[in-house]
Amino acid sequence: MTRQEFVAILSPLVLAMRVEFDGPMWTVYFRALEDVPARLLHDAVDVCLREDRAFLPKPGELRALAETRRRALLEAHPYERCAACHHVGTVRIPGTMPPQYRRCECWHAYQQRLADLGIGIEPLALPPAIARELTQVSE
Image (cartoon, rainbow, N blue to C red; front, side, top):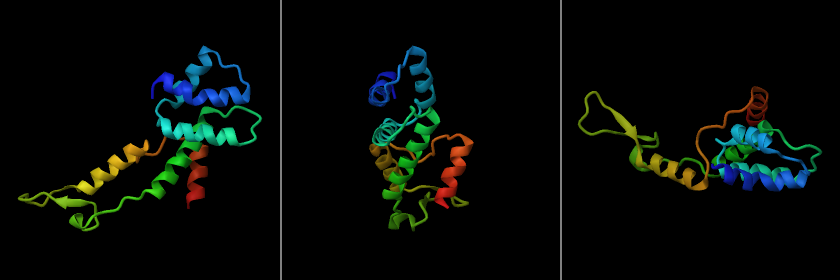
């Protein structure tokens, strides 16, 4: 995500919270959140705009909201293996001894679907307290 995209996504929240953001503050938030996919950050900002908040969320809170949205999207779009990979996600490479395997094309198609959704399969790095909280909720 570019800084310009980041500013466009976060500006409605900054305006709604009536917070003065100077150059260094934009830099801090951008550095903390630049690896979050734009769609997920946009969704996190939307959640904050709908809530009654007294303070602007910290970058870690926005990251946790983005991770919650990423998990919801992954649940809504599960990996469905095809018959060719025998429902294990890999196929044997012909003529290899001992047998070697590679990811099936259905896996690559799934990865592309996630990319089209603007999310990734890898979790967002979270502060330990938030990661524990998310783990407890999902168990």
